[in-house]
Image 1 (cartoon, rainbow, N blue to C red):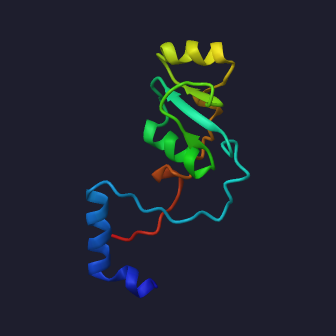
Image 2 (image 1 turned 120 degrees about the vertical axis):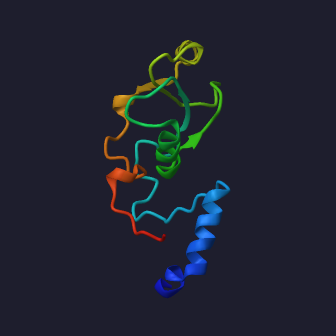
Amino acid sequence: MTDYLSLDSTQNLFKNLEAVGIELHWPDETTATDTIFSGKKFVITGSFQNFSRDEIKQMVTRGGGKMLSAISGNADVLICGEKAGSKLAKAQDLGLEIWEENKLPANNPTRKEAVTPLSLF
């Protein structure tokens, strides 16, 4: 397997997939059933200082949670940044959990600087 992954043609394939927006993820050793995200449905609103929205989405989905695009009775948690707007008010009306940025794990394994990845390129 290592030989295949190190071939120039394989590395070019990975680069081409990434260029068109396809992300490849290697399975983590931890199971998604033991995280703060497991089995919950999340909506994101506002702007964040320490994470991009994509990083938060990856953190949630890799942790066993599901992302929703809108606040509804189906959601469990609103992850709320600065300038949250109307989604925050609606989440409060529905009685959803509200998480601020500081509730998110500081050592997010999806962040590039948090891990030492195996370089495929």
